[in-house]
Length: 90
Image (cartoon, rainbow, N blue to C red; front, side, top):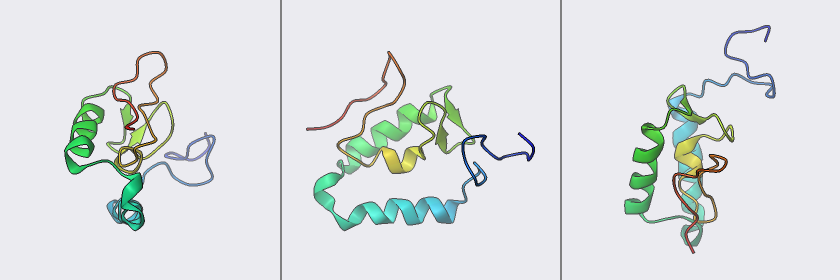
């Protein structure tokens, strides 16, 4: 990597501001049928917060996703290969 904080697979910095994260999370509210309950969301975030694969306090090392965004969706599971920490919700 030639520039600190730039992901080799990305064109932008891997450091995401709180404002960007809040905007992404707010976008999930457009279709409430796609997102998990607040209880499930908070449980998922707790798991991610304690995971060694959480980078920069925001990003999953396995998927490159912002965990506060990914954890909102019913159709998303933990991307930890071979040992997912949380599952999709039907």
